[in-house]
Image (spheres, rainbow, N blue to C red):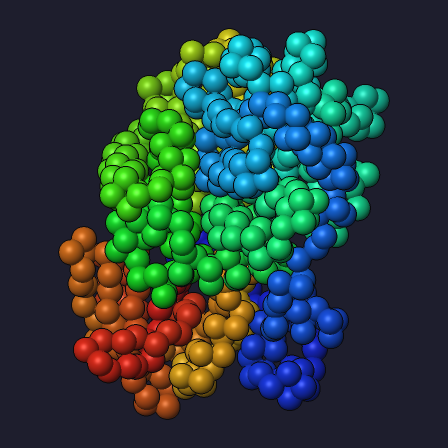
Length: 574
């Protein structure tokens, strides 16, 4: 992303920041950040500053939860085999683990099947159902999928199977005369907070969080202590971050307390993965879940089988757990290499076909490993700030994954031309699809014809929370900002900015030469250490031309050789 193409905005929401600061014992800067997150009411501020497990909502507020638990209890008591069908990503693996362990704990006869990304594609299908029936399963319990599997579930009902759906994806619909008609399968119970009739207070939980709710209700029905179900908070937290859910409301509570538990995890597989990636357990953060540990869990489902990731979580011996963790780490390194090749190939096509001139970029890479399409789409979206679909050849036809920008809802746009697809699904910001090869060109044409996007939408916007002089920052303020964690989508790390800064010293460091260390000089003559991670050469060229710079930054305490100092991490500059 080039500096010149960005627009910086100060978030100007008003409130009595000094008054809020005095009332809650926080700095006015912290008060302003909280207001920028649209946390206004006293009860909301209290809940945000002092999150508690009491803030978790009752699982029985989810529509059909009582029906699902009653059916599960009957099947468990009769010894009927229950087949969990999950998904191959972090959310699906963690959800499968939660349900498997939870149902096993109360004496259920339960097995797990996770679709093979290449052979089965996403979610429940007729092959998985037929195999479950052949294996003696009488009941199918989905997690992180199933809401859109109308035909597959109809097939299961033809086989006289019981089907229980737990999911969090958007409800499929068809437009008839401009009116949305939502689809519902023949499942015996559907637990999904996105259902219009569902009264759950917060609909943005992930599939593993829904699974966690199921186990909470199940344990309650069996008279087990609440503390037992809370063991799965760390899995729900991992999935919440890994599935890029908004860290608001209940999600923030799940991730905050899940991380606390994970720092002392009793799960041998998670502990082994943390050791394998050389993460200090006491410093484990949402960042590590999303960008260090999470990709290893995902690598199983991308390049091999997600069952490998599930086995990591189910490991009963430290040696076994360490072997699985090492294998997943190696798979992820291979995934990184393949991803970089895919990104370079995508850039070549964008240049050659002038796709930057299109509102929605459709990049067709027939030889790309289909599991990497979403990652490549995300990286291309970051660079060009356009909605991007990356398509690749598969056994079923052409598969694609998309990553979007805030002003373009991918799922809604796909619904407008759903007759082109063999199947599709997703969210506003990400989607997946399969279509016949002959429909690829029409797909690109239709998406671009329908896209109501302006040139303004393609300019990345940097929203600054507080224009704050470097001199205002203290160690106490930095420590206070930690109460706003965990940071992530929907609760982003605060963004600060300062201007008229001189650069006293600068040098490129790091084994990959992608770090710039600087000494900054403000207008009062104070000097401060700073660091920039990114295109180091580009920054050095800019600094050689600039007399003064403006920076977007975040302050941190840098510990080195027993010494601590305030350091400014620069994210953008101009």
